[in-house]
Each structure stands twice: as C-alpha cells, then as structure tokens.
Length: 118
Image (tube, rainbow, N blue to C red; front, side, top):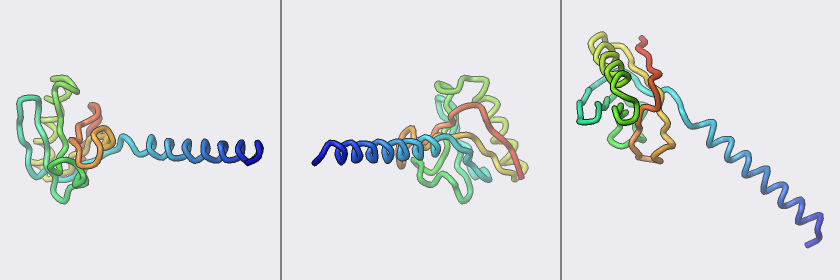
C-alpha cells in the first residue's frame, strides 16, 4: 500500500469512529416515564413501574431513584411527585441515562430533573 492510500484509510477510520462516538454521546440522557403503575420503597430510595413502560429495556422495567446518587432532598421531592402523578392519573417523567449500565441495566435517575404532565 502506498503512503497516500494508508493515510486516506486512517482518515476514513478516524471520521467513522468520531461519528460513532458522537451518536453514542447524543443518545445518553433523555426523559423517560409515563403513567405510574407502582411505587416501591427500598432502603436507598424507591423505584417506579410505569404503565406501558418506555423503560422496558431497563432491569425489571423500572426507574430507580436512589438517595446515594441524588441525595435525600431530591429523592423526597421525586417521591412526592411520583405519588402526586399516580394519584392524579398523570405522567411522571424523569431524566435517565440508559447507557450507564448497558442494556437490561439498572436505569437510575440521573439528576433532579422531573416533571408531572398530562
């Protein structure tokens, strides 16, 4: 192989790898949730099951809100919002990064960003 061909192949390989990394980074944190079906307390916070879940590729099809990750104040606020959403038959959504633990991984709330909506 000539030097120019080799340099061209390296340039193409670099461009493809940058595009793949950009696609992965862009897919990371996103809003997930829906109508709350069940709320389960556990020692480090709680987790939420959703009706017709948008998190069916997560472990046990639920979002975990953990005090060790988010802190007590955020977990308390999230718990209140999840209960209010369930009681009013509205959707509870929260930011999750599904790529942290991989496919069928534990989908943990990433931060305190959450919403109740129709």
